Length: 592
Image (cartoon, rainbow, N blue to C red; front, side, top):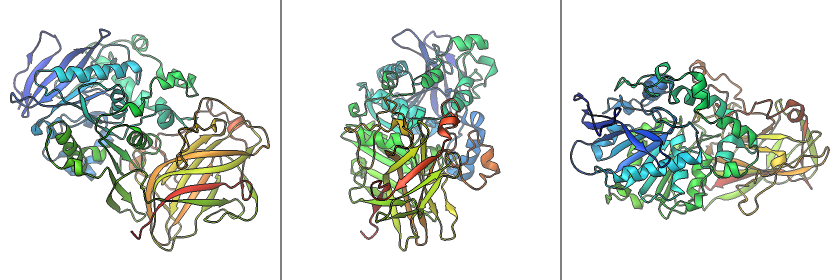
């Protein structure tokens, strides 16, 4: 039951009420250093005790109900995991942020802040800008300074809310005590915008489907908060021309900055500057956005206390399940509330290892990559179409149509269990008659009957085991940052191909985990286009806002960014002596 609301602090939009065992303050003003007023909703316990705030700052509209804004995703989640709604009314659940009813009873305040120009916050909409990072740092201090706050602030949220965490933490806001970036990129260029230097279409789809509709000023053309009746996207309604004036064309800027330059650099965090305790949660199936950043953040952060957790399934599910919430709460109970709950005895790496039969094995490790990894080279043979532990004796070459089926190289069926867990890399030797070529690599698995084994990914029902990408003209490596299992490309120069010349390419393949049971086969596909699951995605999956055929929304099809006259020209892959094309895989011994 809710009490009668009352205005507080003299602000015309701010309102307090007691509802469902919580004190809720709607639309609290947070004025940041450049004078823009942001709006926050605060959910906290009824008593006088000070509590630690858990803050999220982002673009999706703090008042947009999960069930209304994302009905298909919501229904799938509660159908598969009905526990998500056990013990909660779910009426305060919001896309990719914490459910207050699962946190407030345990002595936390949930603080949701609309980023500038989004939802009910004023200012110019400028997604992922340095100014947003500054805003979040100021909001962290604001939350710490509130009379109900202990001053120890935590950050929690998925995707956009996770990316913001990496960025803010690198600036070391004093009040930040711990963070849980859940499935969120850390390097916007490499993790999201230009995979291997190849422009990804996702941002264009994302802006129209998830951002434009909650821009501040959409007003009565948008939705209402079902708990307050207020408009999610602000009290005023602006015309389209005014809305356009009130936002930065970030998508246009992305397209204008095709190389990794100062514009990209100022957005990306220096991960080595992060020192706060962190729990980084990745998704094996988040190929294209929700995998690489969590591994990079974990390995590169300077934090003395850091943990990595990796799971599968759909992007948002485990953030809300008992598994995820219990993990999050144990971490915050220790670092925000000071509880001696044994968290520090938790192994640094918590993996949910996937098996080819669809089962999952939970296992703890002490480092990433796993120390006992046997780094194994599998050599490509263009003549036989095979992967083998020994290099082929003879030279061979095969040409393929980049927009066709490409080439596939298969390992013989395994006779005993084979576990591959970790980052992968490929070294390929190619030539082309065009000035450039895009390489799309997919690690695939097949059962003893030849059927492809795929998994429910973060945003697609049929993801392959792993993906890698590289534009050949971006082949230059940053030698200082490259590792044998994780080549790191500088992406700061274009080096065109000369017709008929053979080039050596090192290609990063994002981390993965799979245990192949006897009779299964591992394969590497090399094409010039996105992986496509050969079967039907299914009627239910066609309803998803980002329906896909194996890579979800993370496609690379823009003809302006990939002119067919260049990237549709035949490519030749060379193998054998002199051109040792190979795949490096992280084999984990199973007899230990």
